[in-house]
Length: 109
Image 1 (spheres, rainbow, N blue to C red):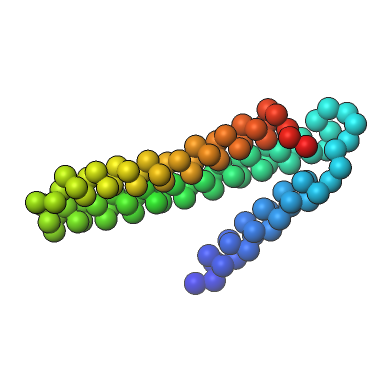
Image 2: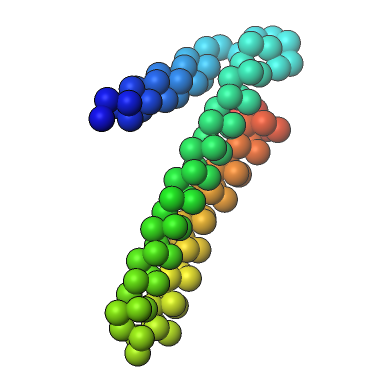
């Protein structure tokens, strides 16, 4: 029971390190000290967003299939609601991809 708590604390610590990168002043040379932090923030953010999207989509599909098995007459309406929900869940990964691309190529600081 303690292992998930330790994992969450370690992940929160890693995410706190990216905040230090945002607080630092940008050096004069291109890339500089913040370059690795941009890659770390983009990679961790995309990994977390993709993983959570996969979990959410799996739970949504499982719930929809269960609902269709219980009420076959409403399968069309349930499927429509499921597809809309899956599109909204997938938008989280797409938004994170845009943020990761900005961090890797634009470097807004």
